[in-house]
Image (cartoon, rainbow, N blue to C red; front, top):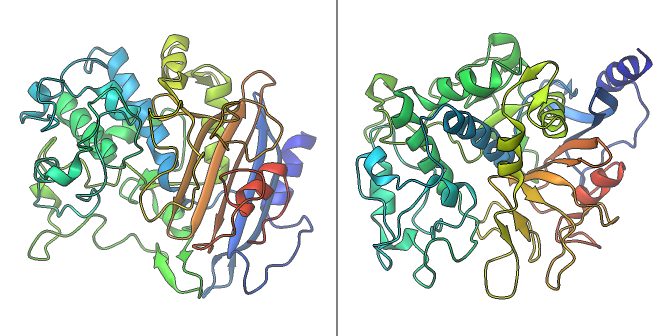
Length: 407
């Protein structure tokens, strides 16, 4: 009871914390948890500056690349159901040829996409496909492929991998991605979360966290309490008729690579799922074997076998950020030359994922041996200061340690 009361007290902004200043973040939230529930929580700043609405641990934010972990949970549920195969050629399922042009005999599989080893890059784009567009047009562009490395031989973090995963999920089920992920993951875990706001209720939408640039100008989710008029990229001629959706044609539509809206308390539930080997609060979402497959790692850095930082402009990570990666699960604190993947600074091999986009930085990290974890995010820092002990930013290092971020 004391643990719960402390968490609620903190979520309401009743715990003392350093005031924000003009050069610092707009808002930040940190929740610590163990297998049984939330241990402590802190929140400071504004979810909506114009409305002067203070942030709480239950306010949903666009969590960026942490979204990929939720997509992987859904994909693995379909693997368990026999509707997807981690190692099958995806071309027959998609209905179009998905092949690296320089290595046309190597099949592209779900496992390769989820582990960022499919040979793809983000150089041809990944998020701006219009409602009436086709993801095939992106992968047909030679710029989408790393010409120097065959699929399965090299790690390169590419957001494009996950719209392709979403397309495969849609083709395997005939369901629209946003509704499918709600059915497979979000609803079973009783999470007030959604991709691009489509399946969130009005009360959740009303608590949206606005994302800001360095000048406190809104750049995402300035919703004024209302669901967005068009939750996806509009069609070529400006329309937003979602009846145009076709299963598997455009898996980028609902932003599987980064479009999850979820609160820090919701992230804590996902973290406890990791601690519980696929089970949380009496709900078994995945088998223990499937969770071990997700965690991996599928790839461990050694000189010449991968790129250790995201190359997309939205990322603020430095070299050495990625050194061990499973299926949308990152492992921290790799003891290897060239690796700087320990924002906690204690050498503990935590698992989870990070996010960075539109001035937001986020993280979900669990120590499965000790049974503890932390979830956090900070907004309004599109140019956060570099960390002093890792490839993460100073703000992420502070939140990992349990301190208030400044820059």
